[in-house]
Length: 178
Image (cartoon, rainbow, N blue to C red; front, side):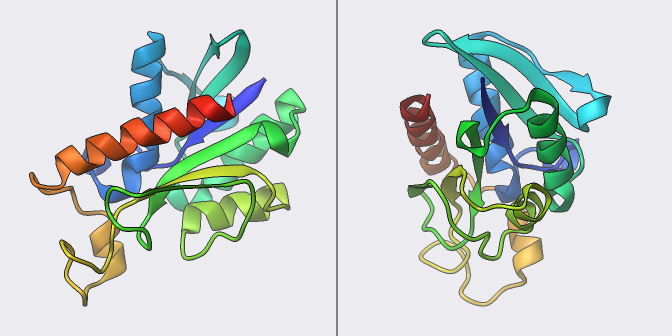
């Protein structure tokens, strides 16, 4: 079974923020698959099971808030006894320009606290990740700013169409993984 984790923060106030790109992508995939998430307390996550091209999949949205995402991911991997090669994590990346996607099969967490938590909890970096660029310092975003405030800010009206295309690209990459 493939475990697909979208990173984000639970709560209305975070719904359309940059830090919730992972949730947005996994929600779009769940909608496409016509499945709904359910609260799963033992995993500290919203989850749903489905399949894609005859591959069993588990979609996961940790409810631990971003900085503790690894707690949820490690519980799920241990429960299902799945190896890291069956894990893909989708999340925002402030160091990529808005509209860019980057896929890697391993690597560090960089500045992303959710990924730091996952790497710490699973004890390894060799799992697939799909990063969605949110551009912290560039053409649209101010060059000098508080990064915490930035990642928790919503996308502007001019950024939303770019984000929509990014999520579509992220899902294409996810489908390649599957």
